[in-house]
Length: 188
Image (tube, rainbow, N blue to C red):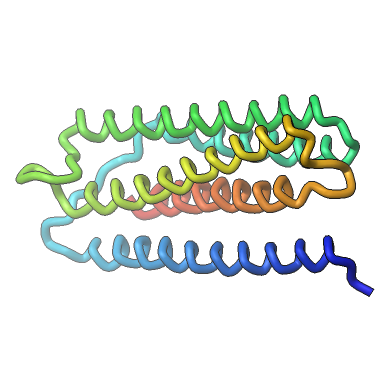
């Protein structure tokens, strides 16, 4: 017989997975637009700034910290959970910072998002990267809520659904960026 906690977990995970599929479809549409637009006569190819390699590493490390935070909560180690969630948060902030630095490098190279000097390639790239950063900001807000709830003692080894759901979302964002990064490496 399924208990209330298991029923709640199943329901919330299904809702999250539905949202992630919807989000995946949005990014599939954006990357498809990028592929189709490459056939335009005014298409401009460019190299990804090297700083994106660092930001990719940071989001992967952040995801690893989140994984170990969940493992720590399973062992009822709330202090270690807090430290690892905080590390995940800081690495997420660093990811956004280096994404911004990459955007600055592109702008300095004459690749603008809007204006008469902009081009379709850089504008589409910026839209995709900005959409991802918006979702990372949402993920960072989730981590802050998890930190607050952990501080309040809301989670235990028997009940830490928020951390489980947050981890799924954060891993999705990390995986999405790795996909986008590899996509742009292959297509640019």
